[in-house]
Image (cartoon, rainbow, N blue to C red; front, side, top):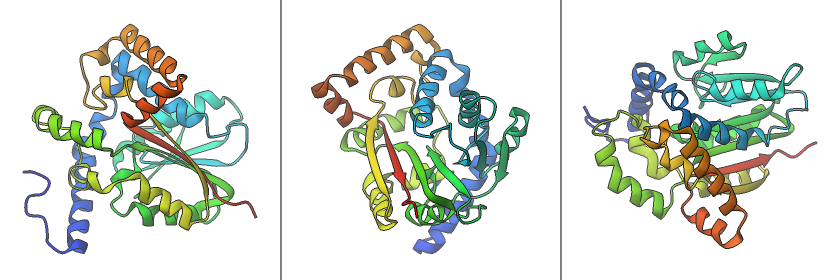
Length: 277
């Protein structure tokens, strides 16, 4: 049955319905897809580079707690811990599904919880990371307001999420009907709310919270060639994806080409800082 079949008509009931569908999908389907991009050498290299984009903004030499919403099986947090080494900051992940129970085997802390109802005390975190999870929260502006509560003064959000642009929306319209006949890839909230997730409301919420922020658009070439999370023939080749990533890196250093890549980007990276008292 399609995610939108038999959906309630009132906005509140509709949102509650899709939250329940999302929870069930993440348990039944989503958690079993998490390893796939990391099992193919080409896509694994691309996702490691994406992780490093986020890690570069975590300031791992400072103490404090780094939390990730929607941590899945801990692929990102595992790279954080390995990068930080012994004596690094405490990292903790939360996820809607039982996937989070894979974290202790990696030496990581994990909690099964909802990103719209965070189980953290006020001022308890130094960094909150959303790596592809914020767009799975229906009321993502309210979620950011609650997450702000958990940040210590001077703490930050690092938000790495899908771009919704005229280009990406056109590609989705053309390719989604083909791809998703063969691959169960998008969750119910992805399917029903994807066009409601935009950069502008995220930035507006950060402004409302009095945070200072920077914005960058990234991942125009290598990431989409992996098939994103759906997989592709290119995702299997480590040499090919390394070549594409190297070419993308060169292009990012040329101003005019960098501006074009921003138009074609598939991800945006926001780093937002809470004022220090």
